Image (tube, rainbow, N blue to C red):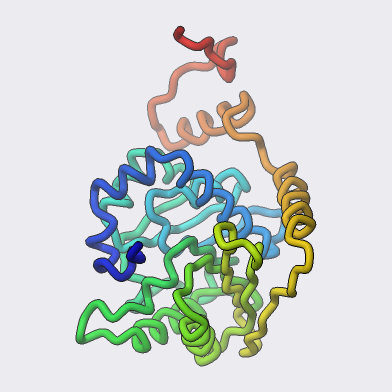
Length: 274
């Protein structure tokens, strides 16, 4: 199977049909949400709400997960179709989206973001889609503006799909050149299907290390990670219960949006039709 980034540039690959798939496919949404939660864990954020940058925000699946943790966010993506899908899916309630190419210079205020998350986007920078823009140039530009807009000591976590060890080295070298420190975390290293790579950077010392440790018993590793995730989930509001619905309705009222009045049925589960 051909990797998506090898078939065409992202602004063409993520067309209207692909955007609909991300909105409608529950499996894709679940996987994206789980990887976003893992990225939030690796950010080591304080308990207070933070301003985060979501790179490659797409249809807003990761943004909705950030909403559940009460963080504010700004998302950037190169696909207009994915951004439109996010607006239609009401993913922008807790954040804003910008149509932009992460491989080109972005002019955010210096030291404005408390952290960065990016799900399944970083590997796209390694492709040579245009003769005038080499991957090396795009990577250096990307990490340069990213370092500039991050608070000192803040973290950036990228979940990505490398095609080779050489690609990981290329990414980490570009990060070092821009002043980042950090390392690569590999979840479930012994599983072909569940293995996930996270490049964890912080705006500070320019040292890159392999932060993952060899796992002798993969089953125990999976149980440990699930416990850690369940502990984090207790801190957030359970999605779609009455408290969550009332909170979202109040947010929409503050934005002068049309909201149905509250009633004794608000938050109740409806009976199935048949």
